[in-house]
Amino acid sequence: MNAALMNAAQNPERPLPQVAVVVIGYDDAAHVTDAVRSALAQGPAVREVVAVDDCSADGSADLLGRLAASEPRLKVIRRRANSGGCGTPRNTGLDAVTSPYVMFLDSDDVLPPGAVEALLEAATGAHAEVASGLCVRRELPSGREVPWQPRLYALHAVVPHPAQRPLLVHDTLCVNKLYRTGFLREHGIRFPEGRFPYEDVVFTARVLAAAPRIVLVPDRVYVWHVRRSAERLSISLDRAGVENWRARTEACRQAYEVLLGAGQKELARVARAKFLDHDLRMYVRELGLRDAAYRRAWWELTRAHLAEYDADDWARNPAAPGRLVGRVVLASPEPRDLPRLRELAARPARLYPPYARAGDGTPVWSQDLPQVSLEPLLTRPVRALPLAVDAELRPHARGARLRLRLHELYGRVARAGPEAVEVEWRHRDDGGAAVRRTTALVPSAGAWSAETTVDLPALAAPGVGTWDLRLRIRFRDGVSRDVTAHALTGTGLLRRSAVPSARHGVVLVQPYATHSGALALRVAPGVRGVLSVVRGRLRRLLH
Image 1 (cartoon, rainbow, N blue to C red):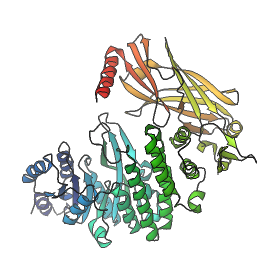
Image 2: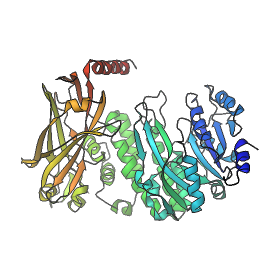
Image 3: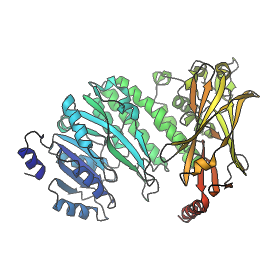
Image 4: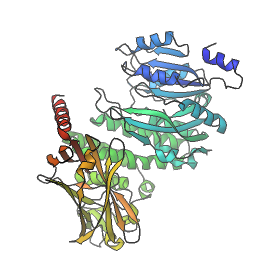
C-alpha cells in the first residue's frame, strides 16, 4: 500500500485516492520532471502518475527513473520506438491506468495546486463522466496569462448532455479535463495513433459523441506554457509549413464526421462553424508571412475543405467574419485580397475598403467577386459590425500624436451617428491599461476623424514593454463598439524614434503592425531600455 492509500485508510473521513495523471514527453528533459512533480503535488487525490517517455534521446527517461525510485506513486513507461505524435503515448498511459479517473498532462506544462481535487469533487458531486475546468495559456518568459475559452468556465455548471452546451465543441483541449476511466473504456474512446497532429480535436469529438454528463468549474486546472522562442516549437505554434494546416483541416474533418456519425447533428454544425471562426481566421492572419508556394498550397487545401460545406453551414450567421473569409476563398481559384482578408480575420474583425456594390446596389466583396454578397451587414447590429479604423502615430519632440479615421460601411455608420472614440493603450504582458482618453469624432470627407496625444511617459513607466491599441467607438444612441485599428504603413509612419523625456532622458518608440494588421507600440525608456532593445535586436539577427 502506497503512502497516499495508507493515509486515507488511517483517516476514514478522507476519500481514497482515485485519480491517475498520464504525463507524456519526448526529448523534454528540461521540463518533464516539473510536470510530474506538479501532478504528484496534487495531494492524496492522486493515486498514480503514469509518465510515458516516447523514446527520448536526451536523458528524460533516466530523470524520470530516478524520481520514481523515491516516489512510489510514479510509474515510468518508456516506449521502444518514437510514435511521432502525442496520441500513441497517451493511449499507452491510458492502458496502464488503474484508477477510476484519469487526466492528461504534457511534459512542458503543469497542473496548478488544487486542480485535481477541484475536478474530482465536481465529478463525484455531479455524478459526471467528465469534469472540465479553466486552462490558462502562460506566455514565457513574460508570464502573461490568457484564459482559454473563458466564457465556458465563468460559472459552475452541470451539463446533462453536450448538445445543451454547444460551446463545448470550441474547447478541443484534452488536458483541462478529468475523465471517468470506465467511461472512456466502455465507449472505446482513444486518441488517434501515430503521427497525427491535433489528436485532441478528434479525441474531444469522440468524448462528446458519447454524450457524457459533464460538469464545468471556474477553477484554474491547467497551465499551458507557451514558449514562442523555443528551439522546437509545439504543434500549435509550428504553423510555418503547409503540412500543419493539412493536419489541422484533417482533424477538424474527422471531428465533424465523428459527431455527425453519432447523431450529434447540432454539435457537428457547431464544429464546422468553429473551424471558420477560429482555425480559418487564425491562419489567414498569418498568410502574409508565407511565401507564394505556401499560399497557393494553403488556398487549394482550404477550398477543397470548404467545398464539403453545405448550404445550411453557410446560411448560419452569414455576416460572421469567418464565413465571409471562407466564401471569398471558395469563390476565387487563386489567392487574392490577402491584406483585406487579414483585416477581416482580425479580432475584432475589420472590413477594410473598398466597399463595392453590385449593379442592383447590393453590397458585395468586390466588383470581380459579386457572388460574395455582404447584404447581411445591412441588418447586423452596429455593436457587431466589422468597423474599419485607420491609425497613424507620429512621434514628435514632446511626445506623439495619434490620428484616427473611421470608415463608412454602406451607410450603417452614418445612420448610427458616431460621436466619440475612447482610446486605450493596453500592456501586452499584464493586460493593464495605462491611459484612457476620449476624443470627439469629426465628420471628414465621407468618414470620421479624431486626433489625440499619446502619453509616452505613462507608457514608459513600467519599463520596456509592448502596448496594443484598443478603441471604443461611441454612437449617439449610447451603443458602443470595441475595435482595433489598422496600422497605416506609409513612408516614415512605422519608423523607430527617440523622443526626449524629462523623466527618462529618452524614450525609444517603435510603432508597428501586428500579424493581423493592428497598430501596436514598443516602448523602451532611458538609456538602459534603449540598450536592451538594441541587444535584443542583435540576438535576433544572429539567431
